[in-house]
Length: 124
Image (cartoon, rainbow, N blue to C red):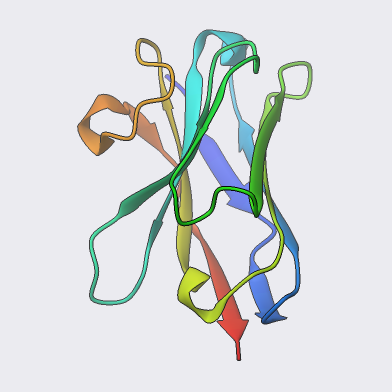
């Protein structure tokens, strides 16, 4: 069982930056591949970024490639999402998720555990 808690969301102007954190409970964090997803009002939840168990491989949606960076610190049981050059279309609730088997997965059903989400609002 893994519990995930996101933090770091907020209101930022277009072009600004935010860093999201996702803290995981338990001693087996390094056995989970992690992902970030987001859901804008009236839209389906979509893949943003993912990272492998060791952090050696990362994956990004085309819409955030070059602007967002996913990383993890297994000693701190935490995964991060650094978001730069933010745009109004990045406004959404951001969720972190964990799965044991699929590194780099963009498929929601393949993730076993989800956080409660953190709101990111980008003003124009």
